Image 1 (cartoon, rainbow, N blue to C red):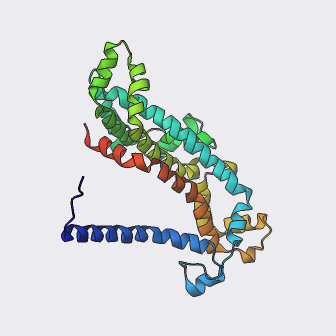
Image 2 (cartoon, one colour):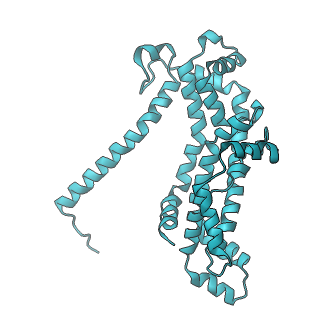
Image 3 (tube, rainbow, N blue to C red):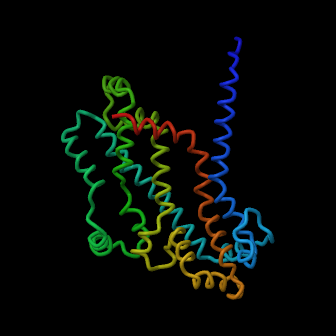
Length: 295
């Protein structure tokens, strides 16, 4: 088969589009390059040269301090635990509500949908929520306080419901005729064809859990339970926390590389979740698009 020859205008248009996309990619990567380069820079150079794109005097002192402190690994453990367990729980709650609401035969479907939507507009406020979580539920200083209060998102549920509604009804109807019940249809038919939507919503939840720090600030006092982002926030705001981290690794507090230490901690904090993107990227666009335009 002969290929259709592109006109000069089409070739120029494609070149311009690729050029703009390349420039935009570098524009997005530029801050990350500065963070990575600054994490390897000598502290004394920041006052003279600012934050570099390439380290002038390469050093691993900041990483030795961060990785030499056991607190960072405890924070990693808390964050990994809350991300994995929280994402699984959140997806279970989201799917078990989204699928019934996608079925027109569900009784009180509109009422349940309204009350779920209502929670997107109004909430009880910070003080009642704090009293509920810390006193009534007894979750203060408990690792599950990072999971249970944020385990369900109405927005993600509606995206998942819309994705389910976009699946051809003939699949479910044929299974009904063969004697399958709703649970069997969900498990054996709906979920296998919903991988793009599930991957997309799972990514949303995982990012939320990984970046969580506010609930830790409100409810956690035990430093062994601090998640990674909260530990990073404390370091950013508190120079004493960085000095304590340096002291545990045998480095004099007068030699603490404040700026490079912050950058190194940032690199370590965002690294794993950044590596997750390539594995779900192929599902992300289709899952988000279908879930957003249907129903």
